[in-house]
Length: 452
Image (cartoon, rainbow, N blue to C red):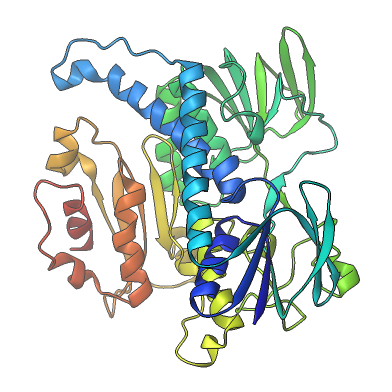
């Protein structure tokens, strides 16, 4: 089985390594760095910078922990080196994994020459065709840039200009209050920037539980972030002194820099997809079924370009499932991906994480649920750590006790949500969590309290 993969991000790497273990002859083409945008521009660099900011915030709270004030300051060049080293180390380890599995790694760009041939253009300029029995397109996405702005990488930044930027903004205006936008607000606020956030609707994180969004808004406001709600940016003026963002309600927000965090678009152009007969939807995503199969039975799509949840964890699992389907394992015992049970996290401070059915979603569906909530202010470990912000909320079936979903706001929410994700995935009951013998003192104790 000749399995050719376009794109070496989370989906491509997982498909390549798993496919090779299952016996496929795998060729992986990546133009930038193994690990893809997740390593180079998105997940890893942003979280590395957020981790640095969190240490700065912790240093600022030193006096509340029985310490004398700590004068910690940001070293931008050291931060830049740290991010680069982490990115390169991960890329090297993933490349070594691919090589150990016998994957043929080609550095360059690729497109479909036909439905069963991939044209590879190496970084040295040479081109040749590779035959394929199965093809996975996993070329990711890129920041969406509206027609009314021209990012210059100096004053007007996209997310890919900010890991880290050339200088820390004195006053950053962030356009976009989704997951990426609020993470940038938190990041640059922790670095000492004054931050203004343009919120096109009436709450940040418009697709999240309103109670969760409200908790984050309160923290933003307490830390000095200015929220401009109900404002939609329609233009940006910039000069050597700063920027001015013009909104549709005539408000003008001035700052030293502006950052665009208003979504992404799929990298499906220039791949020869339509010429090969692959169907795209009106937004440019490849149309796939629950096996990540396109309208052509041997061509798959995974990761951001599949139009599903744009999460690295989802992309990795899609890649794994594609490899299994390519090798025929899906004809036997095989669990389909259930995107509604995918856990997600937002690395603000406090962190936010959720999984499964949300309270507001249940009410909209008219579904009866049991909602239990416990604040971290009642948790011994949270008090010991000096950060008792947030809560755990669990959604369960009132008749069966099965855990349907949950939300966590607080320190280490991205780790704690794993317990609820497992419960949702395998249909555990709240009593299964309550009767678990957990560590004391630990934040996880609040999971049992919330399940009770």
